[in-house]
Length: 375
Image (cartoon, rainbow, N blue to C red; front, side, top):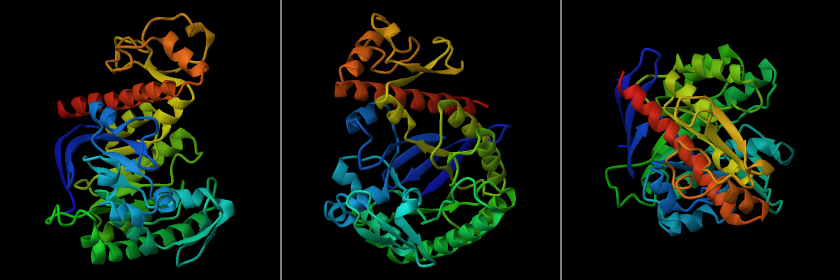
């Protein structure tokens, strides 16, 4: 068994609440997954993530391959044991990070040659090698190796890239089927293995998105991701591409939109029928002193406001970040103190800001799940 996906309730607007059962636990969806790029959600300890009720987190194949190396993590017993995280986990394929190294990579039908952003050393990722690395890492969910095109890109360029993604998806699946028993925790969970998701590409072209979704569904993956979005296109285009792609993905499989977005966006996409989302924004914004709050603290459905804690106006503001928030930061610390930490360059500021923002995202998804479950 790689996963079980059971829909508990569906709304008229296509949103649904479900239970996603993975080897390391059950995830309630729709879910937001905090991003733990290098086996750490930046500035936030694992026990705090558990207190925030983060049921699943994401780690980055490219970064962990370069440092400390997937073989070291395999010898440690896999990523769960290495980073002391016992709940479910997902790894990306490394494709997006390689895409972002446009000046340091060379793409062929076989895979991608690239230079490390750390030391300039040369490396090669093929679909098979991405699978090998992800199996060594041992996350519950792993992603097929794909190529993400730049925005804007021509229809022809996007079509060719999509064809490469489909070919790589087939090779990824073949390698996964032949080697999935090699996951570090195979003996611990003898009847379970990792799940592999295919990634829909197609840029900002409706016909290509449809074609990509249909082609991947033919390959029969346990779940499907929608990639190549939130890369500079207008928000309404992102929404349009998600909506039309969802039409062509099976309703009985989990559906994951990669790399999105602001709190109001993840709420909107969840109500459209997206089951899984991730984004670095909560922790990245927190490290830069940007905090998410509700316009009306007493109404958790009111519009989202971004608070810049660096502003002088908070120097003597002894109220919480968000009076309606129940997180451990709002319960204990004032705006004035958080501003002081940021102005002083104290690392604790980044930690507390990130904890609040993650709590805000997770609280948003918890509320949405409750709304969907009650329809």
